[in-house]
Image (cartoon, rainbow over all chains, first blue to last red; front, side, top):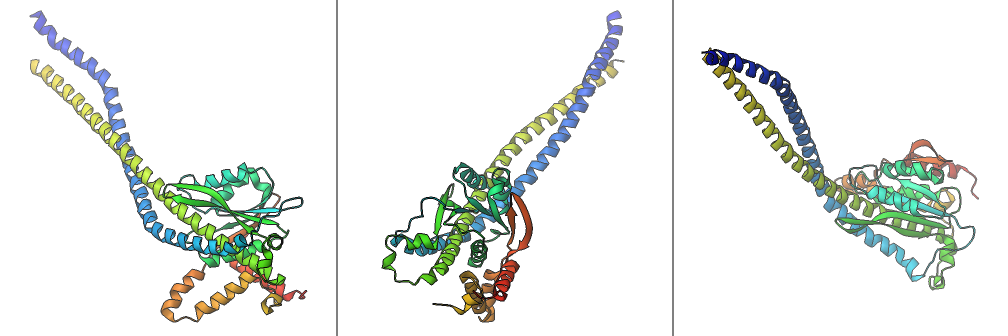
Length: 298
Length: 76
């Protein structure tokens, strides 16, 4: 009898103690359940965004690549005259070098902008810098602020046009200070996943005048400044187009990876969410059953 | 060889840009609209002195202004 009488009390006690232990844990699981749900939702949204950006980049890519191929041909043809004249940059004292960095305003495309910045920082000689695009500006301000003479913004929203390259070249030409050498740094498109910072040289009149094969061209000297300006615009157009194609392709890859990672995370969180939910349900069931048994016995 | 546009203070690129704009404007309507989109740009730029960024200016305006000031200056 005693045992019978004692049992409900015992059970009630056990139930009470288990509830006392379980109560904070159930509220905790409910909270985490909601938390996990929230996190899952936000990851889903991020995946949607990255997927859309990837699709946008993919559609832009073909156009950018076509423009890159055309502009590359164009730039190479324009540089043909320097090749056949065997123009070399002037070495020696008193040379002033200008480096034009072709990046763009937008990020979310992997490390292509920082690749350019790193390339600039690696150079040991001194030179002045012209920066196209906000991304490289904000990176190079920290290390090379003293060397910057000009910066451009608003380029690279769409496929670069020759008018843009011309306007930029026009402004660069008007810079005070006679630069003996202009170098354009851009991302060279190797294949869809790899790029490499490389340079195109734009020569000054003096460099062209002193090139070994200069006599082969029967040109008057006063047209040479025109050639220099035009050559600079051509090379800039080439660099901008190729840089743009690299950026779009890099963005496509970056967004592809981001969507993949988001997909993985969604899978993990979904499993975690289901497990926690089941655990919570099991916990509740245990409570209900123990409660029911306890009251049955009374 | 001297060029009229050079005496007027234009650079070669500016000269080309003006010529290109004239050609684009004289196209027929359907082609003109597509072509004129290629001529647009909203580039801005800023000059830097001693590691400080100067005022941000619209590039097209600045280029036009530079051509005007050069044209007004006595031709050398």
